[in-house]
Image 1 (cartoon, rainbow, N blue to C red):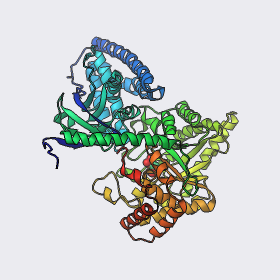
Image 2: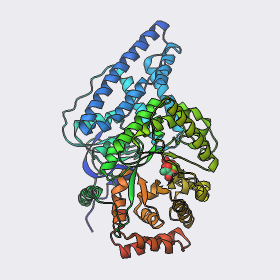
Image 3: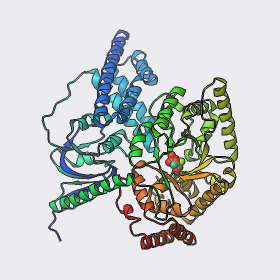
Image 4: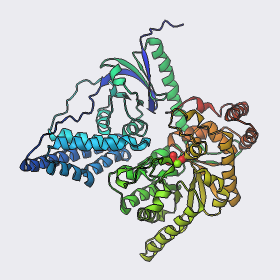
Length: 595
Ligand code: PEP
Ligand code: MG
């Protein structure tokens, strides 16, 4: 046994950017909108409004500067975060709210900002969708900057050039960009945040290890303490003794080698040992992510979650806003395909600008295509933009949450209307744009043999499909252990969907998280799936796993596994058999990348 000192502590959070770092803590100040309500005169209110506009001008200049710096630092593709911030700053609804508070309620600019901030906070508190929740920090970021600019201050310059680990309650994206631009950030550890925050995206692009959601790390450490930040496993170790430091240094070396290996994998061909071709694509939320995804080996965008166009703003996007995003996607991905999923908003992904009624049971509510078929004008705007961008010939239209055949018929009618409108204006589009549906509602899965006759392809959304089929909300800690992708019922259902697609000769792919797990992806391959779409960071490890097996053998193993009664028995059997024949296939399972 090592003589280990015991007064160190480990804190678990969410690893959002992989890698390991060891270094000294630098605590940053907490975001604070402290202001008291003071009544002012009408004349003063006009001055306050001017003061706010000046601060807004100053904020705009700063954001443009940050955008430029981030562009220089990590490439234009990542400066979009600050484009989004500039859009928030210009947002009409936001400005109107501020103006009303100052001019009608007669209060100072600081108070108006803090009120608007509180309102957004309340809205975001009710949101359960993780990505949407993270957009709060973008709005906070802009409001905080605006607030600070009401009384111009000089940013304290630090002479300390030593590399540090940034520890903060929440690190707003522009603050992160500023610090990262200084070049002396070893790692990031935050009380708040999650994998989809823009700070996490920046950290990943810069290969800076980061752990978020640590709850109270800021209260546990002080400036000058030493930490290990393990962004791969989502852990922070405070004041680690030498033996632990050494253990993590080894882990870091392993991780560095692993990263190099993965990069090599991106260039390899996607064939199994017995020559069966498979296709790996990326699930993305932002058009700027295409290049990064392709550098990891993606051969197409298997799922573009178009609702994120709405999440970047506080008003509704118009046709041009949609069109710009889709054209860029099509251009950047060409000649590979881009599957644009129409908005999956509603339910827990509620947005203030959509004015959707509160629902008692949002997961079973007015979501995705159900909402699109209610707000048809909004849906047609999106369809028009997708069609206009389809001239490149590589866009596919994907409809979420289809439950019954009638919905497909309605979509087809609307699509026909929009096509005719475009034709009458001589606007070009891909007349044969493939129309596919997400199979993510069990009812659709059960009639997939019929649906397969109506559409050009299926994309199986295992996240929702399993949640609805097993009646398990996997974000609910009390039942998440029951979310079992290898449950025999799930495998039977998947087999039926795949067979239905094959029988009609249509394409079928899986775009849920199952695709990103090596064992589950192998099982899917055994069920006949050859197309997978996933968070791009998982593409290399899935490619590794699928390349290291004989497809025929996997199919045999899965056929037999389907005769077992429980998920546990199936998993044990599949692992044992795969490892026996293909000892390296599940290697990547052992090395978590993130989360
Ligand atoms: C799914 O349900 O599996 C899916 C890919 O869609 P989302 O995760 O966006 O709901
Ligand atoms: Mg889904």
